[in-house]
Image 1 (cartoon, rainbow, N blue to C red):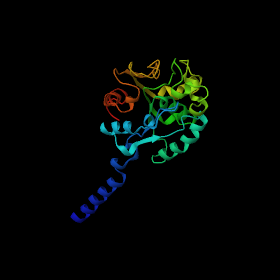
Image 2 (image 1 turned 45 degrees about the vertical axis):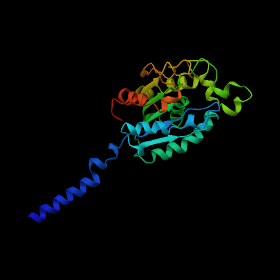
Image 3 (image 1 turned 180 degrees about the horizontal axis):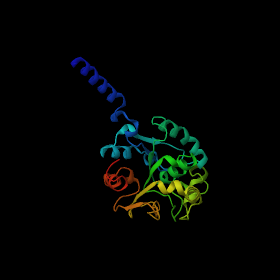
Length: 243
């Protein structure tokens, strides 16, 4: 009798290891895909999202579920998609079909994240769209950095910048929001920005009317991807304290 009970307990133990909750892929953390800013001849450190990854880890999110994508920010949107498509495929191949994901985009990366997810037909899997000093709805000033020089612009600034300058209603973004209204309504949108951004005009151009929008004082544009204050606020407000 004892021997039979031992066999039964052993079977239950092995079954729980193989099929239990701890090994259920549905219980895996939701992957975070980080989109860098840049453009206009921005230096490499401006496009490095490693500081953002470190902040997520500091707050308890597992490093193995953080992904940093890269795209040619001096090229057109079509070229960006060519670069991003295989990266998305590689990232999502590590998860069961249909697994949702979150995007965190700094500056230009905010709008690139939405445009790429929409055009790659992945909106149904996008859980949260987060912008840190994002430019989703443009800015009313000049093109950034070397983009402002007409003879240099073709080498430094793709067509995505044409969507962002001089308007609060960039056509490509508005088209995505209109044509994908049902899917976009289920996407949780969160934007963090600062009056002391120092680069963006207006500084809150990443804000969605149906999203969570947080103004954080005394943080400059580049500091947004490394600021403990920004990421702590993000965890609490955008994720309800739980990644």
